[in-house]
Image (tube, rainbow, N blue to C red; front, side, top):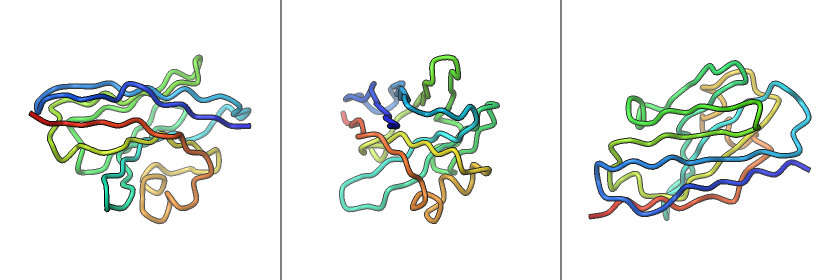
Length: 129
């Protein structure tokens, strides 16, 4: 049984930083995509970044240059370093994983996210002064 557990959310002032962590268990394949999504109240879940097991990363334009995705395959752990946070970054952040994807852009696309099998429960990020 695949389980994804996020941590690292919290409250931060504009311009601040946070690092989210997602620990995966139960994934038996060695190569699979992992990524981060977020969902604000009343909005659709938005794909932010994805990374394959070789470390190739894809970013949404909304976070490019501010967020950095990385993973440690030895620990089955995914990270999202978020810098220069803005109030509009306030949302629930979700980790996702799926071994069937071969393209990061598709993984974080509106169509791709509907096909992802494994999701975490989310961690809240609030950016406010």
